[in-house]
Image (cartoon, rainbow, N blue to C red; front, side, top):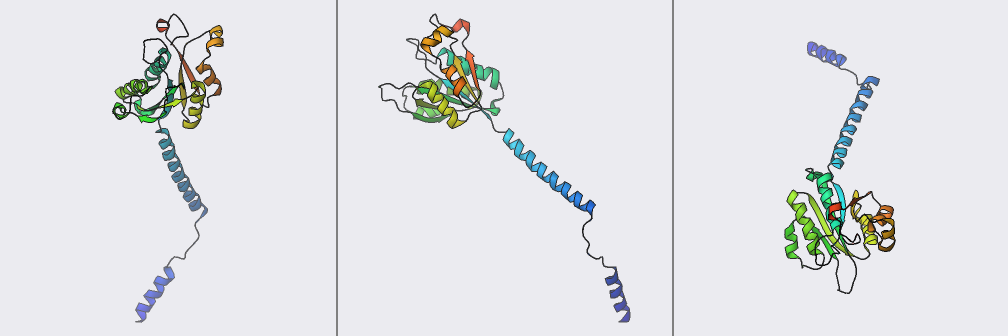
Length: 219
């Protein structure tokens, strides 16, 4: 019994006393915490980087008689966006297609967003402007880039700027007829107004010379 008691007392004597962490241990712990925070920040940053660049392209119908097709300038702006900007990086971009219908007496109604698949149009009435968006949506679908399309009514230059403020795209792409100063006085330009007033970077794309009609005001 005495021997057992001695052994217990020896073990008790050699039990380590609790002690505060040293300055080196504190620094090491803080370093690990900083690394953990840094890892979380990198993961959040990578998540943000995976968000696609949202490019809004304003499109309109041709003003040339007998041509119910996209205007020369808007078609050119759209094609330039696909060829020069998106190329094969389809997962990095999302195209936002906006058509502004000028108000008249036809009782036109606005159309909510129509998404990437051309099949969406089969469920919609072929009202004015839908066939125009269908053309561009099909092109996006063919190359596999995500898109969204919708119609608004009103003055194009005002509505485009309003939609930019609402949707917040990363870039607005517009077609330009390439009018001179004298012609702009009489015709006016949507692109010029949007460059000044849109709340995002604006890129204007001129028509190709071989596509320009004899009357520059036509499109």
